[in-house]
Image (cartoon, rainbow, N blue to C red; front, side, top):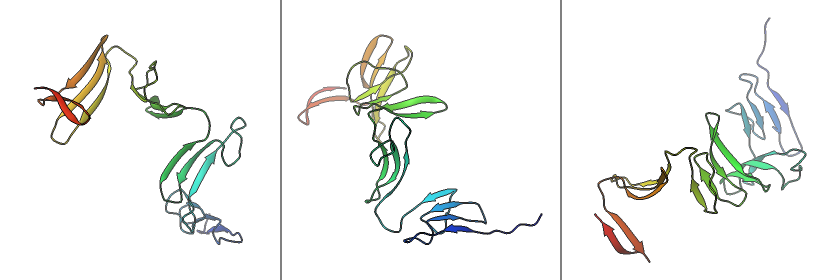
Length: 171
């Protein structure tokens, strides 16, 4: 059967494109007249725009649930209004968690204690916190096989500082 590419537009008092479906490609715009992706949300000013996710437990008020968007200063936002964790996963496995106290756990394991950053793996091969610069210097803090390690894993000295002054060097 023959078809035509027709746009669909809903207007409001303040916007000629409150909702816009582009007939040529099916892209949907809310607050935009020419959506370039499958779903685009926009505003004609810099007051920010967010999507909000709620359920019967979180409530549906402005300060409930979880939002994703940009604020009035164009900062990207992932905002959890609830006293719950924020989880990040790849390949079907949790890789990082920010708990409700703001502590970060990476590696998918569990860590007891109250460190602001915890690196964990679920086996004895260990997890490591690694810092590396563009010159190849690599510093590692690791726990593996029941032991704790701190040092360089490159051919560079390890420096220990207090008050931003070198106090010890291991070459």
